[in-house]
Amino acid sequence: MSSATSLIPPTAYLALSSTLKLRVNHFSHKNNNNLNNFFFTAHRISTRRRSSLTVSMSTTTSDPLEVCVKASITSPGKLGDCPFTQRVLLTLEEKHLPYDMKLVDLTNKPEWFLKISPEGKVPVIKLEEKWIADSDVITQSLEEKYPDPSLVAPPEKASVGSKIFSTFIGFLKSKDPSDGTELALLSELTAFNDYIKENGPFINGKDVSAPDLALGPKLYHLEIALSYYKNWSIPDSLSYTKSYMKTIFSRESFVNTRALKEDVIAGWRSKVMA
Image 1 (cartoon, rainbow, N blue to C red):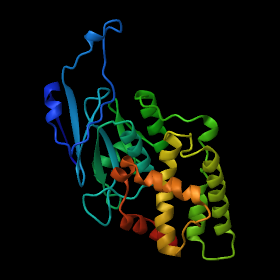
Image 2 (spheres, rainbow, N blue to C red; image 1 turned 90 degrees about the horizontal axis):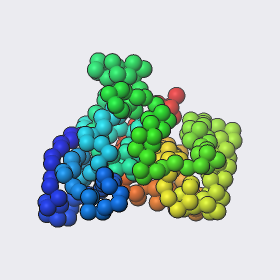
Image 3 (cartoon, rainbow, N blue to C red; image 1 turned 180 degrees about the vertical axis):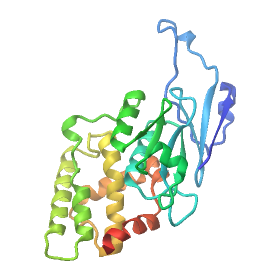
Image 4 (tube, one colour; image 1 turned 30 degrees about the vertical axis):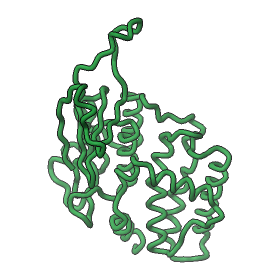
């Protein structure tokens, strides 16, 4: 992952290739009573190179935000399989904030990384010259510092689907088909299915919000790991849950930040084999 910045005058915007995606957050103005005072000086554009080139633009932050992420263990130079890291990256994507990923080999943590993350955990992001850890703290900090567009959901909706991940892990690790772990997972998925049926398409209604960005990566891991290790998939009867997953997984922000399937499988291997 690399990033670069450049200054582009307003007259050059129309000349940008149609293969580049421009995302403009908002433009500042000094006089609300005179629309003629709106102006462009120059906008810093941050590019993030993945399999294709994406251009992101924001007037709220001029330089890419540095974020340390888990490196792939199957494909050098690729993003690894941490769902909590993806939650942070999704937040950055949905808020159209430029960022620079720093890939960290968690099997051989470099000294520079341990200095900013003594516990050796990801994600870690640099905000206002301070490194911040924990996806809960990071996403809250991003919401406070960059409130537009808002990803806030009402408190009563923040916990929707929150028990799915723990019941998924219980079922994945289970060696006893009759221990009730599969039923526990199905119960949580059914409750979520009923909720989305009545309140969807997203947890907070028509717009994606923070709870979706937290749950989506976990459902992605669930789908891949259970298919591979248990030959198990979510029943077709839970059509709203499956539709929700398809919608989340197809969002551009998700495609840009998802881990390789091979990494998800490798990442859960030690827990399955324990």
